[in-house]
Structure formats: structure tokens, C-alpha cells
Length: 253
Image 1: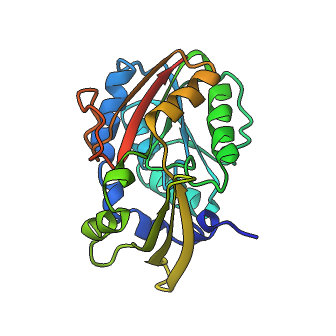
Image 2 (image 1 turned 180 degrees about the vertical axis):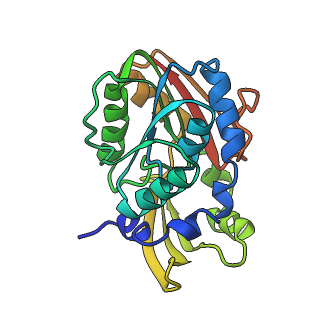
């Protein structure tokens, strides 16, 4: 049986690029560049690359990027966009829980819930981190964002989604946050690229900073820094608070 995240991305590439949460690409890539000292010789893997927005922006700036995603439809859009921009990017259909790379990359990025936190079990989410750790060289770096488990303890997830929703974009309804599992169960209502209205039962895992630190340390990352993730404006000066819906993690081996 298909999981909700597989069904969601079957025919939702054009609309995905118009969502409010995909509008911060350039600023996010500015941050990535600063983090790697603008070293164009580094090899980058973009995990859960979707329609390739970060891969394409980084390739435009002269970086060597490989993009992987589970959705053939998202990758098709990514390849088309890269071709239109005259860029050669290696986009591959891969499952982040089982990546075929070993010690090949200097940097891994996984932004905007690129796989991690969408899986149906904690073990599967951990497999994604484990596989990314394996793809990295011995002094590699991982930059990713994930849902901040401190947020739902102080705020209503439903109200957050309501305030962020705009006309013509996807909507999250019937959110219920489970304190035992730190999963938010909700119904995603959206229109696919063919104009069909769809509803999907989804659930996403929120993580607290101490969990992320422990998971990454167990995978051999030595230095782990966690900040608040502001759309399009990642910064090491943003201390993580209970107001941040997402957190930004920078982990070094």
C-alpha cells in the first residue's frame, strides 16, 4: 500500500513550487554557501530534493550537486527546470532509507522535510539519518531542517497551519498532536497538477533537540548545532525557541 507521502507527490510538482514554504530558496542557499566557505570543489547531495529547487540554485552558483528523491513526478519537474536553466544535475530516484553511496559527499542537505520526519516509524526516520551519514566523507557535514517538537507543547499546530494558509495552496485540517509519540495526525487537502481535489490522512514526527543530538551522536557526528529555522533566512544567530515551527540542524563528523 502506498504511504501518504508517496500519494501526495504523484502529481503535485507544479503546485508544490507555488506553496508558501518553498519560497525561501535563494536565502537558504546563501546560508549553505557560507557554511561551506563557498568551496566549489565540494560534492553536495540534496536528499529529498523534490522539484530540485536547492539543487538548481546551488548548481547555478557553480556547485556539483546530486539530487535524490522518492517521487518520479517531482524529479521529472526537477530535470525539466534544470534543462530549462541549461544546467547538468544528476537527479536520481532513490529511497533515502537505502542510498547506494558510500563516503562520496562533503555535504548533505535535507531541507523542508525532505523525507526525514515523514516516515511512518521512528526507525525509518533513523534509517534516513544513518544512510546520509554513510554517504558523507569522514569530515562531512549535514545541514537539515525538521519539525520542532517544542512548538506543539506551547502552540496549536492547527492554528499555525490556518495562519500560514493562502488561497489556492494546500491546507492541513483536523490536526491532533499525540504527546506519547510526538506525531501530528492531520488531513491534507490539496489540488493536484491536473486540478483534482485530494484529501490524504498524514502524520509527521516532531523532534526535540535532545533527541536529534542523541541520534546524530550515535551516528558519529561530533559537533551538532541546532537553531531556529526561518524561511529563506537561516542563521546561526537564531537561537531555537518554542516559537520556531522548524529547527535548523548543522552536524559535522
